[in-house]
Length: 123
Image (cartoon, rainbow, N blue to C red; front, top):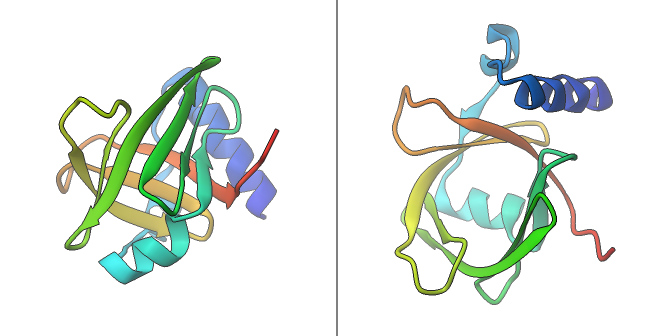
């Protein structure tokens, strides 16, 4: 089931459509401690185009279409705040999850991206 959901999410991101309502209904918002437990030390990716590695020391390693950047992240209250570069201001997101699927949202009702949280890959 997880594999099918990842395929669905990847396909939806690739062709620019939203995830079906049935998948959306399972997403739950996380609190700060839950964000730390589910995201820190892991990769978030779409399994094709981009990935973000949230290192335990607050460094964010992002790869987008082969271009790697080093940024920063931190948890403020119940939001995950990040910047893909060390010099840009942080942008804070609500974190919603359904199984290993994750959605970072600026505000309730905003269009949001969906990725998959995975064990960090060292390749």
